[in-house]
Amino acid sequence: MAALLTSTREVFTEGVRAVLETWPVLQIAVDNGFGGVYSQQKADWMVDAVQQYFHDNSDLQQYEVEDFISELMNNEFDTMVDDGSLPGVAQQVCQMFKQCQQGKVEEVKSQISQLKKKSTGRVKATAVKSPEEEEESDEDVPEAMECEGAAQTSSSHAPPHEANLPAPPPDEAEVDDGWTVVRKKK
Image (cartoon, rainbow, N blue to C red; front, side):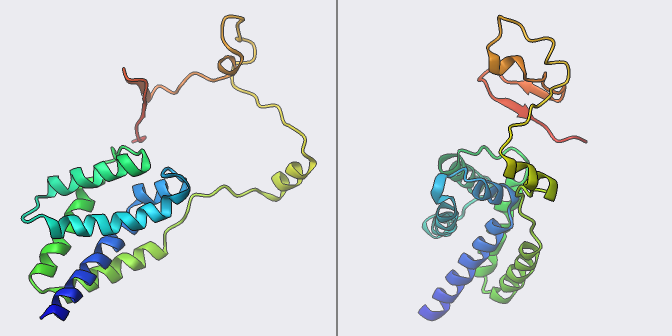
């Protein structure tokens, strides 16, 4: 019986790993080093932390899992999840945990394989230089950047780094605490 429990716990852990590895918010945070130089290790640790959270607490509700994952993202990656994906992630993890408790290990394994197929098609956002850019970067010649209308409007009252910045687009809004909220284009 202990081997069966270990097996379901291992399957659940792999399920959590598959869900988190296919979650774009976490992958962007890891790929861009939001958690510092140990971002990947933090993501790996997060899998164990979420799995342990389920085993330490009984009858978890989806909102509790959302709060826990949100807190981990904020504390470990300085990332506030505000794209609407967190409920889906929490729901998937909760569903897998219930299936493991009910002994539906094969269903969970099927979901894991589907998620892994999805993650192999994932494209990382990395900067790629064109051949022309590579030639220019070899010359080590700094290029002047032009901002629309900013060159003539610089004033002696604005600091030099602010004088050349373009005005923010209309779909960005300043929030009272100094954060800028950027919304998706529809």
